[in-house]
Image 1: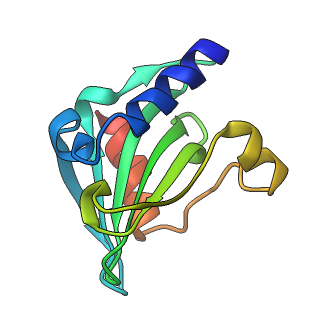
Image 2: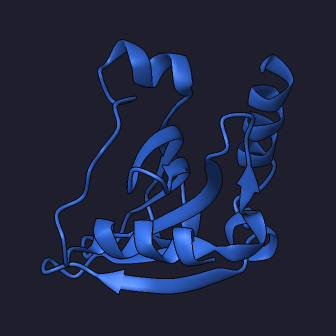
Amino acid sequence: MKTKLLTICLLLFSSQLFAENLFNWTYIATSDDGTKYYADKNSIRKNKSGNYIVWMLDNSSKGDSLIASEEYDCSNLRYRLVYAALYNNHYGKGGKIGSYDTEQLKSIGKYNWVYPTPKTPNDSKVNWVCRN
């Protein structure tokens, strides 16, 4: 567990260009406020629980972005954050605003399962992951 967390952190700190060079973003959906959601199909991995871990990107309409590792439970159509990093610009460019590992997400109550509302971008994300 610690090795995986260290690997994730090293990947995120390695370069401001990592989001474009390391990931191959596939568009999924756009929210009503203009935020665009992407996923990296090549990053999909099954964990010991049988759930999928996937790297996701949210480019907000305000110009900032969130790159997150998310866990998807396809049997219950739900997901949760595992790691998240916020950036000043789209695609993880610009300065890092902050980041949260699993333990930090747990401590602030953000490591909970999310059951998305049908026909929303989060629902589209779950459906995309579970189909791929």
